[in-house]
Length: 406
Image (cartoon, rainbow, N blue to C red; front, side):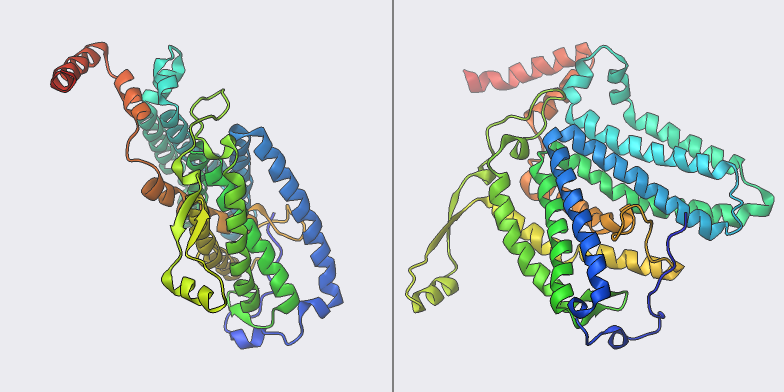
């Protein structure tokens, strides 16, 4: 189903033309939208809390479900755009499903098989071979998709079918980064709940600040976004990051990696979740002395500092994912990607900023937080070796460590 036609101003209009001197709070018709968004937001936040309570696998199932619905929304748009008469080649939807399955299987398999590698290489079931040969299996599936696409080309539809293939690749570019959520979840729910909550906070507070104070349009691509909402949401999100960073640091389920497939998360907490004393910058301490406050140190958790970095990204860079989506919708004359969520649009409308946040979290964690290698990862690699190579490695380790152990 194609989304609603856009009510955006013409693309050539200036930002000044989109500014309204009247605040939304004074427009009675806007309050209906306010209450619809409020009720749905409360419902979605409560639902998100229930899934967090279920745990890691519940959140992974949530991510997969959102990806499927989001992919369907993008499929509907491109099918309508490329084949306005409704005549979609019979092979196209099936190839689309096969391509989506292959890409998802690659990322989910790569994340899960590698994270629980010891479990999979020690089992005698088919799961061992799926884990060991995951890369080759995915490559074979991708080649099958390529062969199937070429085999189904129709002479009268060459252009449309290659346009369709281009759209499919672009759609994957939108969907694939959301798979980074899976890697983040397995490292500890802190690295999923924190960034997702920051985007939610930024989105809600930007709407609230803009609703009551917004007068100046922020960007032409999204005329409803205002500078007042953007700035107010920035400070609101930074404050919220300090609070939620402190809150999440208390429970093992948030701070511990998922090391067992079926067991609860438990670990010795990383130092980043322990309280640490920091020296206050001299400029701030001198300013505090001027008002009679002796402020030279501050006690907080390193995780809270990370949360502030995340909040800055969520408030300044991640919104450009939404602006990009707005530009895409304007280019094709859509108001929303779908209508699944009243007052909010479709899944893609809600997840555009989350995709950028998931990618940032993944890069940040594996660059600044996680070690380059772990003992469990090395052990999993050793267990995957044939027996004679394991014995050879043991002999070399013994000869290497013998001088050290005396």
